[in-house]
Image (tube, rainbow, N blue to C red; front, side, top):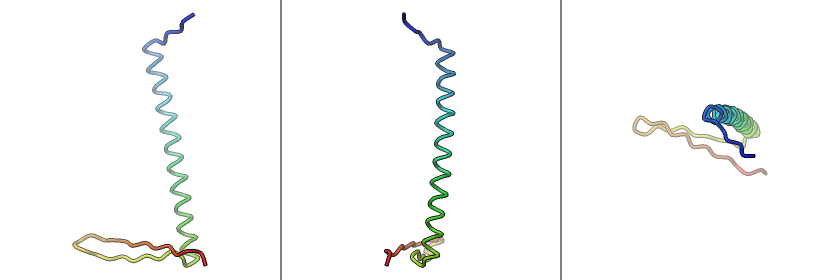
Length: 70
């Protein structure tokens, strides 16, 4: 018995997979952003994160340094 997927089912399947992939990608991005933000706040409160803002030719450059644990 062979199963042949119709064109309509193929399109529906791909739309479902695209939606599922987009959902997972968005949730992963939000989680990564939240984790990175919390790490930066914690490092800053511990005094291990320092930054310097400088301007060159109408561009702002931010230099971020993280020191090792003591």
